Image 1 (spheres, helix red, strand yellow):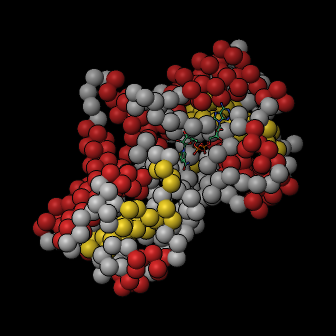
Image 2 (image 1 turned 180 degrees about the vertical axis):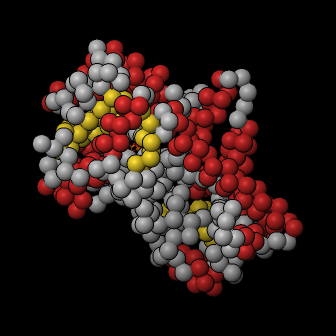
Length: 417
Ligand SMILES: NC(=O)c1ccc[n+]([C@@H]2O[C@H](COP(=O)([O-])OP(=O)(O)OC[C@H]3O[C@@H](n4cnc5c(N)ncnc54)[C@H](O)[C@@H]3O)[C@@H](O)[C@H]2O)c1
């Protein structure tokens, strides 16, 4: 008899999990508070970049159903919570959705069931926030009446080589038997399950991964600024350093960090460390450096125009590639927003081209689309390459642009960041 799985929160994380669990033979139901999402999924339409309509159709054929009506749900064997954890006003995680989802899970909790939290959050959340809510609402005890674990989502949007199935899945239980239950569930969904000592280590592992990226990106961004003054091509230095077969992983400079994880997750950790009475200096420094990069891009753009006898005020500036990630349509927290905002403030006429973005607004103001790439590049006073999508031909862009600022180090004709 296949087990029943309930996925709470059908977004970038919940949907791929629901797909893989359906493929593994589980009977999967999805619950999302947004009625529109449940409706469109049941009609076969995906709202998430990484998952196509064909995959939604496959899920529906495998028995998947989505609902926004909690009253229609029956107690499942496994509940996975994949709801958002945005930053609160005080820069800590806003756990409103996690609390609400835990209450839903508590109301549906049957003896022997497993609850797994996948939302990114600070260490201790599973044990100190989710556990008491589940126990209070259900009347059951974690580790005895039901199992409770944390299992971080490690999705890399757009990655063709690694998906949910072949990326090792970390699980941490609030008790050893909870970890066993989580391992039993995830081992059918993923090729490899890695057991953490407890839920706290699993929560920390996720934040360590993202903080590591955040800090290393800040390192090369800071280096990019002084390398230029020292007359060093940092991209070439990175290319050389990356030939070392051990002890080095390349990170590359750019116009700043974006997406749902890197600019946000390390805050959860620094928030928690601040509660201990001291700062997490690496994270705060990385935030400061990465946060300054869009401003640095604009100052370099201004300088480049100025050197060519053009004030930024009144100049036409084309932004090429405005998503936070290469070959992705994801605009969340993209540093392009800040670049456009600052260019507008300086009086520039801003347009953009991006094969993945048909409509882009910053602070509610629409950015004009540049139209045909080749013509837009040739027409602009300055082209700023913000994202080096594979569809771009750097040599062609370099040939056509009157002035080019390349923040990704992919062209030879333009000026690099
Ligand atoms: N997107 C990523 O690449 C990624 C990667 C790793 C971890 N995460 C983490 O996973 C979590 C979810 O992120 P996401 O990108 O899937 O978010 P998302 O916004 O794409 O999806 C979350 C969904 O949860 C729904 N929801 C909110 N409150 C709910 C509730 N109480 N009950 C039921 N549904 C509810 C929302 O309507 C939304 O559809 C976050 O904590 C995030 O930090 C995201």
